[in-house]
Length: 186
Image 1 (cartoon, helix red, strand yellow):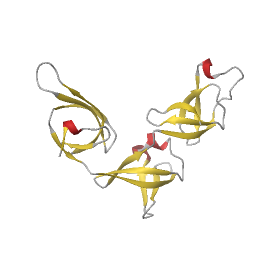
Image 2: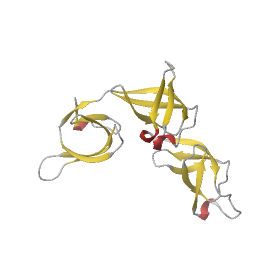
Image 3: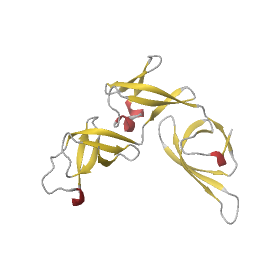
Image 4: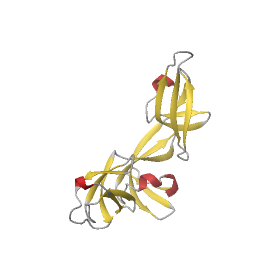
C-alpha cells in the first residue's frame, strides 16, 4: 500500500481499479479543516489526464512497474514494432497509444518500454534528444539568434516543431521531449 504522503511524480497507483501515473501533486493544509492532496493523474490505459483530490493519509494499492530496454524497429502506419533486447521477442503497439513519444524516436534506436503490472504502458524518453532537421525554409542572412521569431521545421522522425529562423535543413538540434520545444543546436 502507498499513502498520499509517499507520492512521487512518476509513481503508479490503483484508484478504484484503474491504474494512474502521478504527473504532479501538491499537499495542501488549509487553516481550517483537514489536509488534502491535489493531484494530476494520467490514466495508463489511454493517456487521459484528470485532476483528483484525496484526503491526507489515504492509501492506495501500489502498482508494480518495470522498465525493459527495447529496440524500436519500425512503424507501419497503424502499429509500432519493438524488439526486446534480451529475449528478442517482438511487440507491436498501436501508434495511437504512443504517438507523442514516437516523434522523438528514430528507427533502430534503443528505448525504455514501461510495463505496468506486466502490460506495456508506454515509452520512457530521456529529458532531451538530438535530431536532424529534414525540412525547413533556409535561413537568410540577418536571421540571428537574437533576432527572434520562429518557423516550422520537420525533423527526421517526421515530427514538426518550431525552431529559430537561422536554422537550415541538415542542422542537428536538441529538443526537450517533455514539451516538444527546441532547446539549442546540437
